[in-house]
Amino acid sequence: MTTAVPARLDRLPWSRWHWTVVIGLGTVWILDGLEVTVVGNIAGRLSERGSGLPVTPGEVTGIAAALYVAGACSGALFFGRLTDRFGRKKLFIVTLAVYLSATALTALSFSSWWFFAFRFLTGFGIGGEYAAINSAIDELIPAAFRGRIDLIINGSFWLGAIGGSLLSVLMLDTDVFPADVGWRLTFGLGVVLGLVILFVRRNVPESPRWLFIHGRGAEAEALVASIEERVVREKSAGKAKGAGKGERPGEGKGAGAALPPPDGEITIRQRGLVTFTGIARTVFSDYRRRAVLGLSLFIGQAFLYNAITFGFGTILESHFHVSTSRTGYFFVVIAAGNFLGPLLLGKLFDTVGRRVMISSTYLLSGLLLFGTAWLFGTGRLTAGSLTACWAVVLFFASAGASSAYLTVSEVFPMETRAMAIAFFYALGTAAGGISGPLLFADLTSGGDVGDTVLAFAIGATLMCGAGAVAAFLAVRAEGRPLESVAAPLSTRGVEAEYPLPQGR
Image 1 (cartoon, one colour):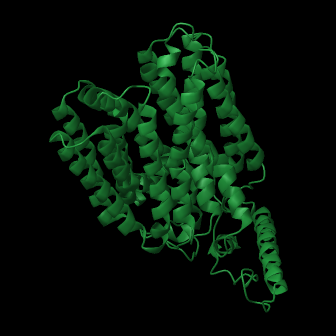
Image 2 (cartoon, rainbow, N blue to C red):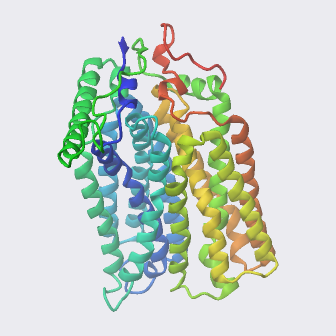
């Protein structure tokens, strides 16, 4: 089968249809940020007498957090496999439904085992979302915009974190809500937001790339034709509006409504389901250098974030005597830095290029964290200046961390895309949520300056190491069709325009 579907998708100008995709799929990261932050902030309230839940603070931040991480890792791997097999649309509906159900039932918790079980299932749904959503977004967004959009969407996690921090301040105020009601309403709000996203998501189609790879070529062609018609109609309307304001046809915002011809075709031969052995061989043998790159990026960002955020509140409390009631406001500052990084630097990943931007954001954030560690160790920082340093570090680190998700999403063949995302996400999440706390808990909780400096140095070292790996191994994928970055396995054995890069 020969098709121009990928080239037709990549030639599209940005339109309202693309915004529908971004809002319908990308906003789930806001929910993830909301979930993680809210649970961290309400840990103390859940353990108080009268909360309606018999748990201790250690169980909320320890057992419940570990179960959420375990659920996210398991969900990513489970749903990642199904996403490659049954399609992006089915799974990004199913995974959101799992999240909504589990969050709603968390709000109804009456015992510790119930709370723990549905924290696991909430993570299970969120983990599945990462695999289904990242693969769908990269396959629907034109190549010229893919980098910045992917980064901004992944960075939107921190909008949820900001919302979670501020929401917790209100919901935990016993003058407004009773102690056993406020935290339940917080989870309930996550359900409401999820239902809104589900309503928008119904209008997001299946990936045409997935359709033609799975032998549904006519369906893919018809779907792309309908998208093209919608985009052309929108641009033509803008052109007519501009002409009606005294501009000549062809001038103004709506100019160039006709689409350029697609730049090339691809020939595939439909094949059966790719086995786990085939996926492993593809990722770790055919693309072994890219696998090393993905592992380095995910491990580096996981440990840097844990070095800063795991003991965030403890450091402020023990070293600067900041009240627990005020740490949320400091967290809003670093969360804002995390979101602004991908927002302001995202375009450069499409223009300056992946290799330069990935390596530089990793190296810069690592070096800046080394500088922060030195200033902290010499006693030159206050709570405010330390938070400002963290915000600057995370401005660059967040763009780098988001590019890790972009990288593993675009550098492996389409038939393995969701599973590759799931594997690297699960590895990074496990490193951050399991190894990180084990390593950094004692270093940041004891109040010793030297131990805290060591925690910062470990995160900075791994981040700089990942940046060095990216300087040599990052793939120049900016502006290129996904099929030229990594040829689909279905092109093997047939003449294809996009040859498989051996060993990269």
